[in-house]
Length: 239
Image 1: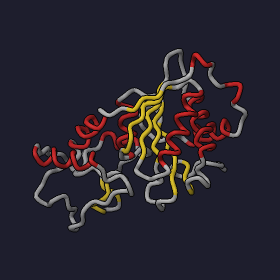
Image 2: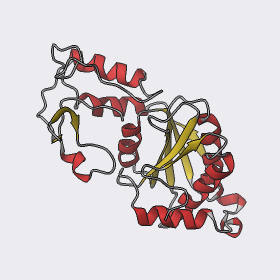
Image 3: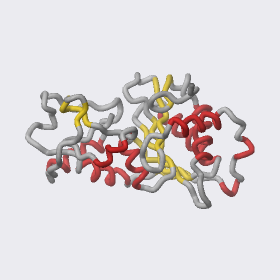
Image 4: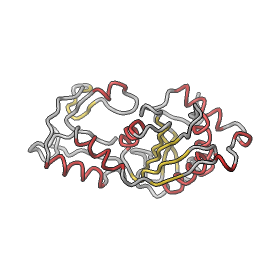
């Protein structure tokens, strides 16, 4: 039985379960596990707009840089954007700071591998083992510490990706039942607004995606669905 990871990353009350100490250890453990060669390794970190995201982001940066991994900070981004950018920017690891639909007081840490997909149970178990071990002797020397940099230009890259999943029809963005798409708390951002606005100006026709359970509003997607990368859908939603 796993100690920290649940079905979708590590989640819990911010500054209760998800503490700076835990985030620091997660950064160190994951950073050590995903250093697999003699080159500068890097991780991309995105977050939603929860207040506790600042605290967790800072602790993760300290953890990753302390084991020699460079950090690229994406700022507020949808979860699928972090998964896509992990692969697109050739990062060794991706991190999303979000608790999805959990209450505002909660937060979470979700990790993606270099392929942009959710980590396997085996990898998460190994990260847990490292979290509970003494990592003091495995920290980098002063000259080998990682660097952190905030990246502002990646939104355009994800917008181009998102535009290819949007269908600018006459339904005003509504689904087959007349409902508008719902977003996670804090993830309905300027990125979505710009993607929809640009898609409306430049319509792109796409094919129907794989449907689940006959519900036309739900499409198979996400880091845990490998075939999602080969599916074209009517719309792309952050979930």
